[in-house]
Image (cartoon, rainbow, N blue to C red; front, top):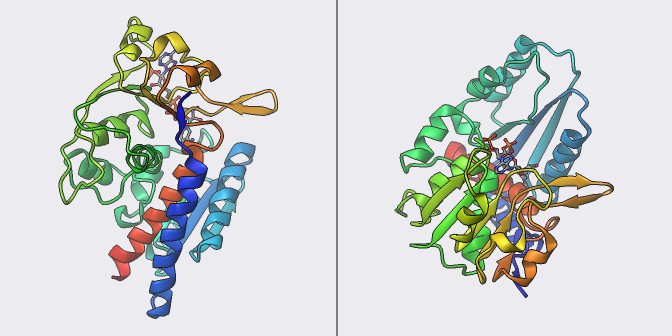
Length: 290
Ligand code: NAP
């Protein structure tokens, strides 16, 4: 049976490390790292995500504010709020929860956040820095996946990685991180041989079977079945799919009998994503306030 990549346990360890560093800063008379979350509209899943992020901040000594705006908020009202948060010295990280209502132009909002406070790492300047090997921040979900692999000692350098999914939030930045050469400026780089698969990939099963590390970031329950997995491979399941009242990943349960390592859903990548958001908010405070 696969060894479990326990994101809940690892998240608790890393959150402990973050809380200790936050407490040191506070003792030294510095402001606590502050996160401002902005939520527009009534999407229940988004409200749930923002609640979890807010709670995690407060539990670990970070300052957290949530700005809940009605569905009919205009782009210009949202841009005004972002301007205020950009200028607020108690705010080190700004997070605009996606998706935004359709009448708001997402790209303009993402670009309005000052890059030094862009803790999601969505701003083109930060994407460019990541891609050229000088990250200011690592994007939260890809960084959570890399931390899971590294802290469970899954060999990555030189290995075949297959990532299923090419989104700007997960698949694409994760491919960039895992393919790059590690340097002092880019310590989380993986030195792996990376293939990115997507909905147009021919013979997905054969591509996946090449992987020493298979990462599923699609959003389709049980897309990855046991016959698609090389025996002993590490399988990281990023997918979160609501099936009835339960959450399921993109990886079918029977994969546990074939894989060498497997991240569960829930309790795998999810808690790691929020943890890396706290990590980035602390990093932003260190970069801004010293
Ligand atoms: P997304 O933007 O919808 O991207 C999905 C990707 O999967 C696309 O590249 C798409 O290909 C590909 N795809 C769709 N059907 C496929 C198929 N049958 N075979 C192969 N590839 C297929 O989704 P996302 O934002 O990356 O999120 C992916 C999943 O991860 C979702 O379940 C999401 O909820 C979850 N997620 C979890 C966390 C966490 O913290 N746990 C964080 C972020 C996302 P095309 O590009 O060709 O359309």
